Length: 346
Image (tube, rainbow, N blue to C red; front, side, top):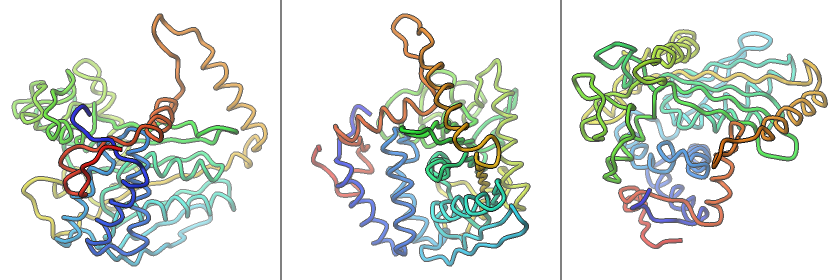
């Protein structure tokens, strides 16, 4: 972000907490939302990081999101359950659901939890990592409003519908895959608008369905895979919808009130999420799993790279960014910096 300012993580977290608290959020809502946003901003997922604070304050003030929810947990079988978010912040609902999935998996080896009456999830990887930090393989996903075109389609149908997986690795940060099923997240288009930067090729389309690099002309995203192989991304987006909207009986992508724009911010969107925790101890055993991950990652990273390249495992880039930003500061775009009252570089 070339026009961004760099802010020390501690200062940035304090500003985020203050903004959410001033918007009327409960202490647990502030804690969970800040935790998720700071995860995203630390690891370089800026589209789902602190830049979302103004939006969250807006929808809490408007009534779409309940700033002081009563989140409830219900066990439905030996290894399954649901979490009702009471239309509160999606981060609080999601961390609660991830913890519940871990609790179930400690008993039965696997814990599968659906979340209902929630709101915007944020970065799905935050919750997969929370499960991995508990020593388990984690999966987190959600569906959201229609902003991504179908393969050979002329209008948006699916949301960006992320799929995130994480696994513990002894002595280092988790293996982490956090990917949208679109070419890029829609929030990145909004970020590029704020920064007055041109979009990469083949990631967004205008009202006619033709690819555009102008973030102001972008009406929808293209599915992962681009013009030739976008059917793969479109199908994976449907996987997220299956596990979240359909399985939970919540809102489907094409039924959502749009997240942003000149839209209703008073009506809850009843978002659904899904979380899975798998305990390695109940399969090959935790020790063998740890050894397998070590041998796998060592072999993967030892593959000779192409000239000028670097072979990386999923998560390596994110954890490198986290280390760099811990030393240099976290970039914050101008609009968000003004909202949070930040102006001085770190």
